[in-house]
Picture 1 (cartoon, rainbow, N blue to C red):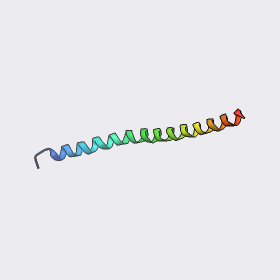
Picture 2: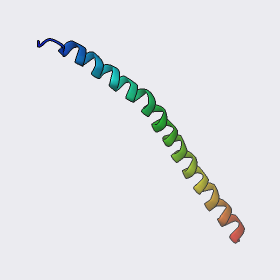
Picture 3: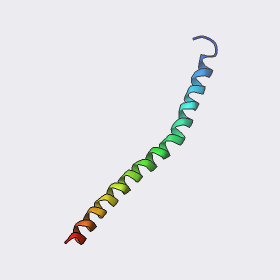
Picture 4: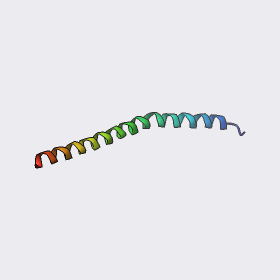
Amino acid sequence: MPQGSIDLLILLIIFLGLQAWWIYPLLKKNRNFIKKTSNLKEKIETLERLYKK
């Protein structure tokens, strides 16, 4: 192995770990937001059907 490749590999692992550390909560929050909006759409449709009668 060329000299410095281990250091580069360690830096790459650290970089990818930090990227996952801040991206994962964003994706989790987005998934929860999508669930809430679909639930709201269902509630709106139910209320519209109720009050149209």
